[in-house]
Length: 177
Length: 184
Ligand SMILES: Nc1nc2c(ncn2[C@@H]2O[C@H](COP(=O)(O)OP(=O)(O)OP(=O)(O)O)[C@@H](O)[C@H]2O)c(=O)[nH]1
Ligand SMILES: [Mg+2]
Image: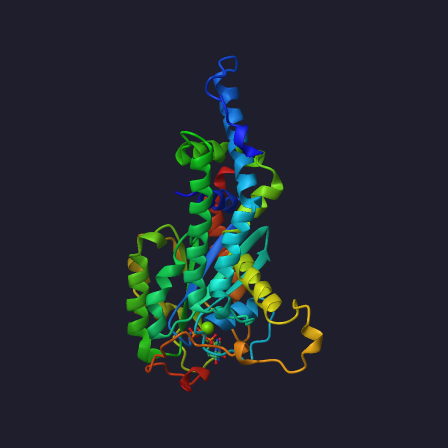
């Protein structure tokens, strides 16, 4: 497990400065990998989806509120990973790690990099919510084939308190407030 | 800066561009986006939120963001400024009545810190309509010549016929590429 990877890193005087930095970099990447694979992180994501999925609808157009939720999500994931790194690596500095990262991001495994990047991709984020929602609302349920009448209320679109510009020169579906 | 932000910035160096398309409501932003993407443009409704399309054009991946332009939505535009490489400002060339509004909103955007590095393309849209102001007239009405802070150009077009859309997009891509990807 991740716990001992960083032990005695600084005391290992046999290794040179640059290879020590290498080890530290690899160790940090290893920790990140652990952190995002652990159940606690899955729970964090799950709770977040549970809290907000009702806002999401399978429309091409995105609601403005998605942007707020997205920002919160990126911040949550980022803070969580950074906080965990600080817990696991004594003297961890995000700043130092970032500097190394600039030169070596091609040395992080493709899978983990893709996964990290997916946390910042809005389209992937929306997809994640839509999948959660559809799993939640039927298709994923064990007894779904026993139910013949399903509620459609959750499919209704809420307009999120959107105001409509009275000056707009054009009539739209928005006018039936 | 956080971990994810850094990774994202690095990724963006790889031939990806973020384009933000703004303008008053009814200017034709969503129509341009869909036309450019080869979609049907007949049933487009006013945008209350935003649309995103990712298009491959030339060797670039373009992430185009189109945010609704109604007055009540304009205060949300700021949420989409971050990391913008190119700003497309769409004008309804036949809407003479609101050309002053249009100028004011654009001027405001050009003062935004987070858009300071963006290339500006103005689309003088709806040129197929009789009575549309020409691109030169729009240029003067918006006082574009006074812009010293951004690379800019104005391009006439019609989102309905598709005329000149590609010319505008090609220009903005080239300008961004020459600013950003010269290190490659
Ligand atoms: N004749 C003509 N009509 C156009 C053109 N482009 C757009 N329109 C029409 O103008 C109206 C508004 O177009 P939209 O694409 O919805 O405008 P928008 O800028 O996205 O508007 P908001 O979403 O409210 O910000 C639609 O009825 C379009 O069909 C054009 O080039 N010529
Ligand atoms: Mg629109």
